[in-house]
Image (cartoon, rainbow, N blue to C red; front, side, top):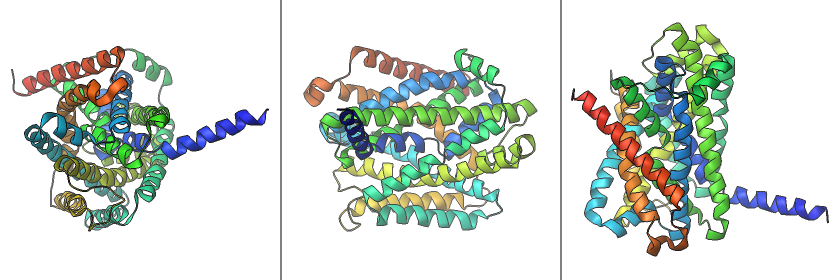
Length: 414
């Protein structure tokens, strides 16, 4: 009798491992080069003052990701596919244009992150960026969904480097704890932009499309959905913890020393005299891992979105000849993203940071479509949102919309 609970637990663990992946991967890839740059700036320029914002952002991330996963499991269709069917081709095309442009800025940011991280080890971007482009292209084009997912899951493990770097920076944990539970609002243009950037980099629009497409490609059954939801929650918590450690690392060192940074690589260089060479090396290695990871996912996400919306064949398990538009778009985004980073004197950091702010501005629009879909009883049956979910979700849309309008108004001097 004593063995039955153990067998049940082992069976449950194996089932979870079979279902897990999309939620953990999607959330962790969000700590990409643009995210690391944004979190580094938040810590270096605002100290621990914005740490509190990560807790409500984490709650919103869990709810938004759970809705995406639930729609994927229940409908068996991707988000852009559902938007086209429910709202028509014209709206879908406008949405696609905004997403492709936003994602393209993010792809450029990833290759900028590769260049920045390896320049710390004296590797020229004219070597590192082409090699990175070839590696990420081969990974997806020549791999299967299962093999690609395994590589992405292994890459998630290396985010622990930022947690280690955080402890090496020796922050004042009392101040960190106080900052987590004490909201501090900065209504300046820079403060508003940073809050929107933090939201945009943690709950990026592309994530919802990629997560739902991954759930569909993995063929997660409705009966296994609770395990898929656990996958989403774990990923959301882990990504927030890593983000928090990046912020507190830079707050404990760069902000304290009055150092302002231009890139995430500058953060790693500045950490060297302040927190030791191991802390700097770990920070740089984390940036490289995150950049390569996201340079694979973001073009893939964009290809999924466009091909679903246009009704073209898509999926990593298909051959190039079976899904030429899917792999063609993936290839084009990698070539253009890497090519732009190789241009002389390209302002890499503005691209990395601004792309995250644009994410935050575009996000409420995506959330409106998601909420209309997930509350459609004809589409979702008994799996529509509960009242609490809708309150938090619509509240997030409203808060982001107001912040975006205030921020844009402040930029225009209104």
